[in-house]
Length: 250
Image (cartoon, rainbow, N blue to C red; front, side):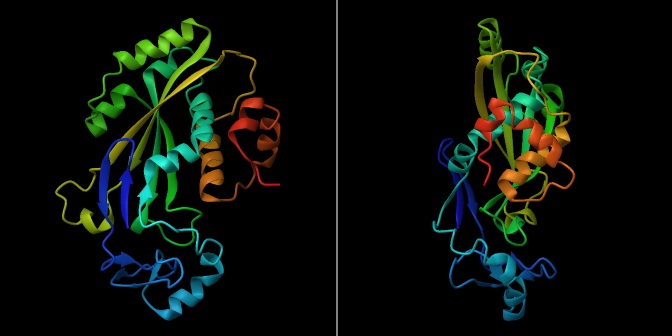
């Protein structure tokens, strides 16, 4: 099942079904497997592993109903969440300069990098804030942070808005290709620009740390539990921006 990005006209490569990791969390053998007969996506090394993983897999089996995974469509589906994450992680209401000098970097896993049941073909591995200089150093990023993006950010801020947040999505190559690559650190880096035109208000309730931003994003996308964070999330719901960003299940 190939992964594409329709907005950037990129084909990431097709996952090789001959060599996949067994999706049962306690196995993960890496060899030829057979696909689930219903969803045609998840693969197991044996009927025993498939049976053992069924309590988890049955929650999502059948949702993978397309032969092509579009990373752009996935990002669009969670755009409000990523806007909310960028607003808090880049401290847009509270520091004018940070949104101009830093990116929000979202590490995304997909395909044969995933193990066990997931709500979608994509899973957020990590969320971090990284400066323009740091990203150029570790990823040889060719973007120009002093060019049009920063100018647009300043323009929005001059008009009373929060600025333009740049969110980078990092996709690793399929595992089937990684062994053959000279540099296994190579990855696909996709950039999204979010214009945050809401009025700047330093009194807006803020998330305490990037760790809380990360856990909120993971919970919404991955379905991961958030132990110890219910009080913080309850308080955040009073914020209209968060109420818009997160569609909480009742």
